Length: 363
View 1 (cartoon, rainbow, N blue to C red):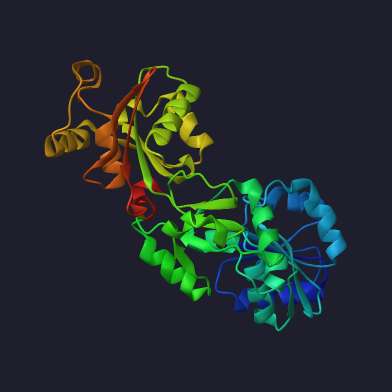
View 2 (cartoon, one colour):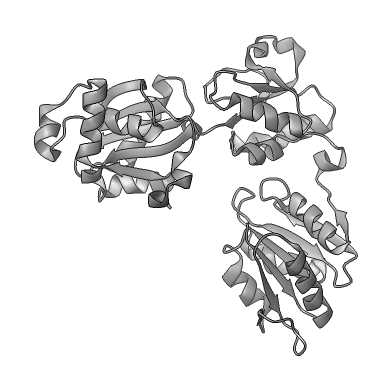
């Protein structure tokens, strides 16, 4: 996490320096005050212009000034709680720290607690589930790095929790990371029930379900989607992002898995300049990995994958989608073998862990 601390008075700038010295994360200081500023403080003249230029560059913004000023300057830049930075406001006496924007998903509530502890301020958090000391699915999603689906129903589920309705949390025990999710939930004081108990629909009013599977639930619910799918894609030259997207969507539906659980997309190095493929990965905000013919051939040989003479003649290796899906998932079997769609072939393997996050080549 990278933090910006913005002040307008010398007193606020000095408080920001205290915060910078105490926090264990990188902190950049900005101040409109003049004279006596801590070293490495970047001066600014216009607050609105500063916020416009840095709003999307930080994970969190701490404003040491009046709340009304902050509301006005950040308002034009607020887009989506899934992508907005955490915004915390403090007075320059360090008495209160207020969680203003992106409380759960953006981490503002947690940041408020840390900022308050760092300078001896009182944390002010108004999120209903936090005030009531209730488990919130979006907090769980952040801690476990899960996607929320459908996102628009999150507020309804949170409202049900606050209203005291029966909203249990369920876990798909088939997930490779189920033990990890159980541990994190236990640390947060959240009980995860076995997903098979979903069958007893009379025992709950709404549900939070951790799974990559597509299910039918008549009650109000949201899914927390783990990144479990490696999508291997082969495509004809000029295939559009729409054609590739439709194929991937249908392939996921074919095996009863959610698109929100796609972790990585993979293909042949011969396709690394295909605009449609690159656009599809960008639209879904997914890492895209391309493999050499030698790497693909190794998978073909080890797992005795079928080859296409046409593909062999075109790029020098006879199987792209299955071989790349296995490579991307670090897997030994396929959830979906090669499936043909217009101008596109798709195969799917399971991902056990996000190996690419520690791979310098993917950075």
